[in-house]
Image 1 (spheres, one colour):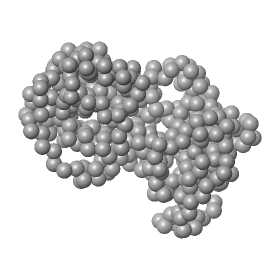
Image 2 (cartoon, one colour):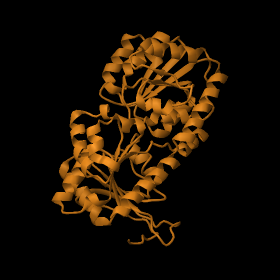
Image 3 (cartoon, helix red, strand yellow):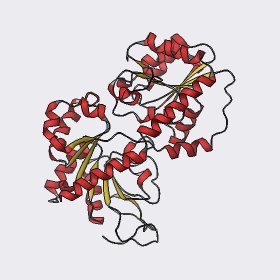
Image 4 (tube, one colour):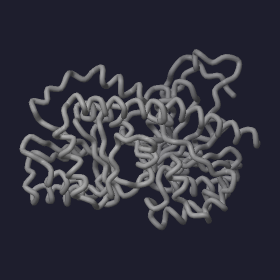
Length: 392
């Protein structure tokens, strides 16, 4: 593999919107880092394939990204990004230019349609893409729409490794899919970049609560996230000093805005929309409580982020949340549609002393450090990559 020059340069391609920053790894020894081509929908603040799999690994791995859509933000200088334009021709141009740029040890896809397109590209472009392929499943089976479930059939059939984002995601798939993948199917729990959170914490000024009580939810504003239950539970439990902050964007924004007004919550419930991740951490660091009433998840990173911020959590009783709460007694699990149950837990935490909430927050933090660190996730994926590379 070509040894990169230490000099950084920016290269633009006339056919594809390409932004490339290349640098020799000053720490590399006689062997170069493995070259990874990562396929993801887009580069954005909330993207796990970008944040956990690329950004946090970029200084130690030779990573190139191919996106289907144009990016929502500028990648850092040590990542190479070939951008699509939201169309099939645009994606295939980006993929073609990426594979012409260098050879890769691993091609890692993070969305069902991108996995399917890679399989198609291996046929039409006459390239043996499938030899070193890994696919990560970022949701439970029930969270996928029918079309995505159908696209996963060839993915489970042809990819060399299919990795679920947690044991709950793995267990959610029917036997048909497990038989398709056989021994190529495994799970690696999502990890969290705790260092990034701690950096945000070091820049966050002490928060003066003034007797208030702040609840935060971080979620896409879509039906499966069950945000109407969160709003109703907040309405039933709240006093005039309580505040609900919903961070995220989605199709239900207008409906939720109307519901906030109908419930008479006024300024006590606020839709923040999409905000930079460091701003999300600031809200979580200042929050008294985090709530997720979701009906379906993969392994919920936002919940882990809240816990790493030492924020107590109330979660819906679904398998991915049970995976997080396994063996502990400080994470309440409530049935997704049990609005009174969520309201009772909110009241309990509001009436709890700040010292007791802080103690629970510390226990949440330790749980994430012990079970869901990014270091552990990366180590497991290194093992997956090694297994795939040995086979070819």
